[in-house]
Length: 118
Image (cartoon, rainbow, N blue to C red; front, side, top):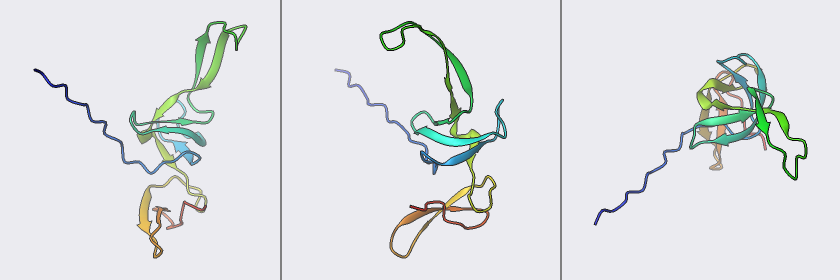
C-alpha cells in the first residue's frame, strides 16, 4: 500500500501587510508607489493598487451583461516591492523588535521609526 505524502506549503517570511505603502523596485512599473491590497504568502506575491495593470477579457454574465475587456491589477513578486517609511519617506528594509510590554513591532531600518502605529 502506497501512502500519499502531504506536500508541505512553505510560507515566505515577509513583513509586508495589507494596507502598507510600497514602491516597486523592478519591472515596467519601476518607481511607482501604491497601497498593498492583498498578500499571498504561499505564492510569494502581492497585489498593489493601480500597479501592473492588466487587461482581462471577460464573457457576458448575469452580473456583467456586456462582457468585454476589463482592466485590473496584476500580481507582483514580494521581492520586487519595498515598504516606504512615513517618517523618512524612502523605501526601507524592515526590522522587528519586541517592546517592553511584549508586543512585536516592525521598525524602519533607516530611521528606527515604528511602522505599526495602531
